[in-house]
Length: 433
Image (cartoon, rainbow, N blue to C red; front, side, top):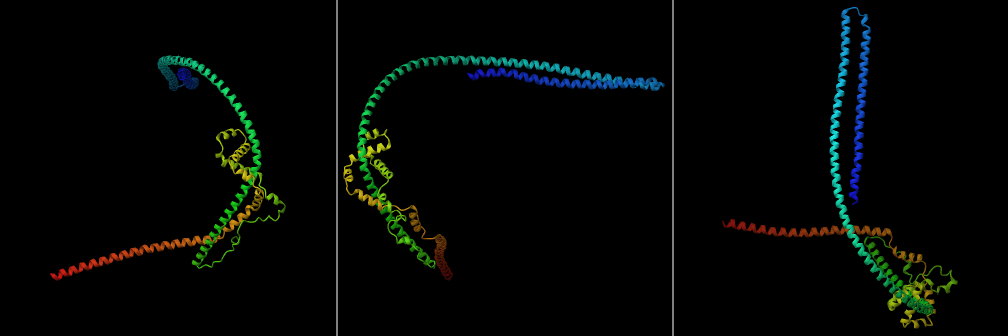
């Protein structure tokens, strides 16, 4: 509808600029023609004036001419100049009349063209008026349909508001009931939290025990890995000696101090810290907290889902304490573990023994295993491998050629046998003949 309203207005408003543009163009043409005509008239006036001045000057000289023949020639010259002026004036008048006639014809054509454009404009405006009338009628029908829908929607919204108010009252009562239940549960959880605090202290001792067990397991795995790596080093050295022997290269046993070492690496700064032996037997609170969270996550399947939902709004530390309390109530072995009299001393001795050295010591130790074969020797191995592969390719080609040669020899033997048989047959036939 907006486009239908905009198009007629645009079409009508574009008529005036188009007409103005045509008039400006026509006016420019008229100005140019007027200028040319004025210049032509001025040039004609100048030429006529020059000829008139020439006649006037020659007229003054007539009194000086005494001979009739000269006088006649002068008069003839005057007559020719006058005829020339009259001919120029007639030509100018003729041209002006022709131009006037052309202007009249152009005016008639322009008038007819404008009349046709006006008729076309009226016809288009009538078509657009019919289109707009039809569109307005359709829009009126749509407006009536929308009005009916709006009336129906208002009634539906009223019923919906009533039902929502009723549901709001029900939800409000439910909310009050849940608040009371949550208050009771919060009180129960606070009491449970107090019990969890007492369990937390006992849990610290258990966490220390777990840390000591993990440390022992770590050193056992490390010793196992060290034995495997030493076996690999011995195999690599044996392989290196065989390669050098095959290549006729002198082989020398490398210096391997790590092969004589067994067990954990002793830190170099152990002798400089004699006053911290008591601190070495203790586990940091950060480690205890991490082990507690890990224990809660791994044993979460032992807890009820209702308890997990109730713990959701609490902070993470409070959740951990409550979960540990519930876990120790579920697990029957917690009291035995926590009541062990030798747990503290055993843990301190294990943790003190499992003190790890610096990372640089480990790096140097494992790097010494990884670098038993130098880069130059590795390059020599690569070069030898490439040569052996080339040698193997040549031997493979020789083997294939040898097999092919044997097949050709066999075929040659068979062909000789056939030729001999044919030759004997020919001899028998010739002897028979």
